[in-house]
Image 1 (cartoon, one colour):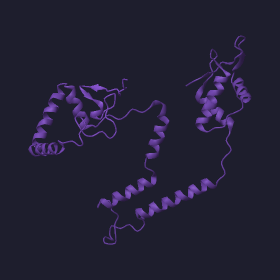
Image 2 (spheres, rainbow, N blue to C red):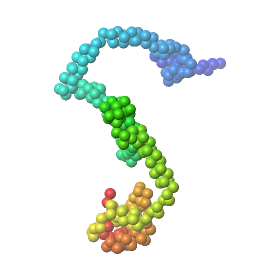
Image 3 (cartoon, one colour):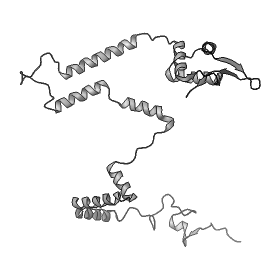
Image 4 (cartoon, rainbow, N blue to C red):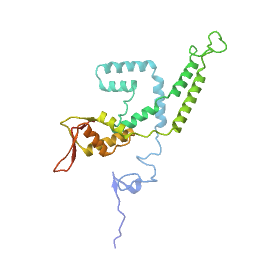
Length: 254
């Protein structure tokens, strides 16, 4: 009776069971070192010796000569030389900003800008490093101004005033928002009253609601919005087929 022997896969004349590979020719976990799978790079020390020999032979004058050649052929329009020169001089090009995340990028830039306290501290450090800009001390009483306080004192006063202003702002009750003022600002910035223009009520009110959300304003009631539009000469019209209500004489700008 014939026995069923395990299938053998032969790749490049070698059995996978003997080479430590699977049926697809890939190394399996725990495979012993062999052809194509060294334990470590046997040429690492030799490469280090070659690099040391290269650095020993190359002088700054050689580098300057090579750079002059790169600049010369880059001026002639050799694109690889131009790319190499610009990358080493100007650096890699910055990553493009995602158009959908422009607001986030702008907010991040604003947060990283130095504040007034940072500018005062930086001015204080520069004054200490610059002997000419350093304030007069007791060693030179002729140049000292008794009416001018030192910069560190001014910085302490600024910090105290900032803390007091922040405390007063937190303690003060918030002012009630005025929906009518927000609507007037939206109408002044985003609406155009043209007799031949028309816009759906839902589209206009949706644009107004998004504007209020972006500026932190309170949305005015739809009935009051329609009344304000009619006061400016606009009129309402309901289409017979779609039953959509449009405002005649108004256009929403981007």
